[in-house]
Image 1 (cartoon, rainbow, N blue to C red):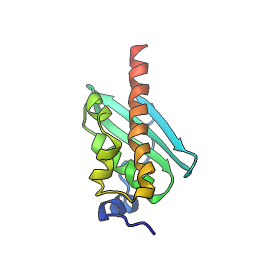
Image 2 (cartoon, helix red, strand yellow):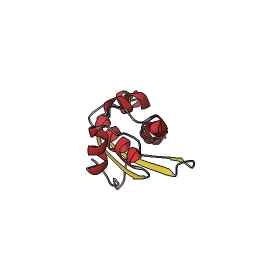
Image 3 (spheres, rainbow, N blue to C red):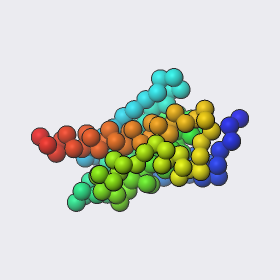
Image 4 (cartoon, rainbow, N blue to C red):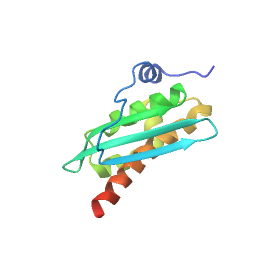
Length: 125
């Protein structure tokens, strides 16, 4: 059984910002077929800041904790600041992840970045 930090356990047991945003400004989805984790992120942007971030994650405890942490880290940031959130930042913020669960942390920031790219592409049209 991998060791999880208290922060990981807290975000797994009490995930923040779970759900969908109707008429989201951006949506991003990533999946890892190897472990079966799927993450979908929804963002609402107001005055170039992430006003709301929600997610739906199907996966292990680490994947859920990572999604929860990414959503917390992103809310209130500008679009560009949120794009700078790295997978390593997320793992560090959670107090680390077991090496065999690091692939989960890579999904969270990627899903957020996809949602932002989706938002930006809609805005350019």
